[in-house]
Length: 361
Ligand code: KG4
Ligand code: ZN
Image (tube, protein in one colour):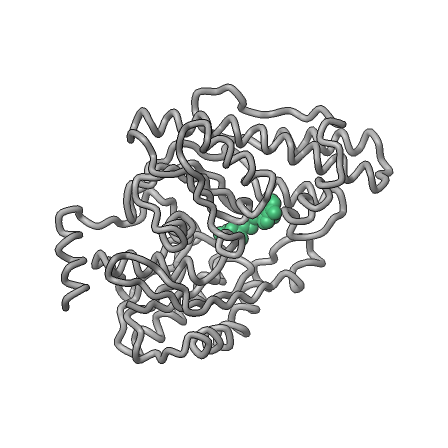
């Protein structure tokens, strides 16, 4: 089956075509991502109204480009998927309405995809990772540790009590005057910095749960920066390196705790999987490799371009859902808030027969 996927929940206008073969393998036919970074940069963060208008202006073109790169027509699609939330509601409305219009016009099924589920299932597109796996999902809006038992079947093992990890990177960058988005800029500075110069806290380390709290780290960093202001170039690099090292130490400890909870509740995971924009960070990837090795599993880390927001992950999640017979009505509402626990899952016994029906209609 070939699915069109549309992503507009934040500041990327994206569309992709993904093919899912009968054996459950995925192949990306086209993946077009138009970033709005320049439109938001002067404000130091995403401005929802600007984002929604930019999606309206760009989405037609982005979809047309993806369709022509993949050399498919609307007529030959098997389904149309769009991120229906969670995210900035103006953008979500734009993408979901477009998907509904295409689905209605061409008589195709609509799949309203949860953006977090799309991040969670990306490892199955890139690596065909079997369930159940241990997921570390870290982006600008979310930080969660999950047991992924199946499509639509998520066990939350931990999450952030305040800031998301990507948000902490973005706030650090803003504080140090580096620009937006902060993650890649902080990572770049950290390479030439001294991670031990500033003694920053490692919040939550040692606790048996798998939760995160990052607002204290951010405050500690601000106090250190204020103490030595005005900042020289090397100060900025050292602050970035110290901050990133603290995050890496926290991630290591929280993932160890998460894996312990996973084993107690679900047995051995097939893999440790990372997803979300923060998973593009090389220092974080390195520590994930180490933790996976320690517990005798492997790390599945999709390429950075598929960790940050993109249309292929939406198309793939749509394909996985369609294969299980999980389609959505044209009356489906866009959602600003949509926890993974509220995503609909297939009834297990029915799922197999539905999948067979989709394969041999
Ligand atoms: O998944 P994503 O593209 O969008 C959301 O759904 O939030 O993640 C974007 C977030 C931003 O906060 C960005 O600063 C962070 O991921 N990020 C990084 C890196 N690249 C992106 N954080 C740390 N290091 C990076 N290299
Ligand atoms: Zn995302």
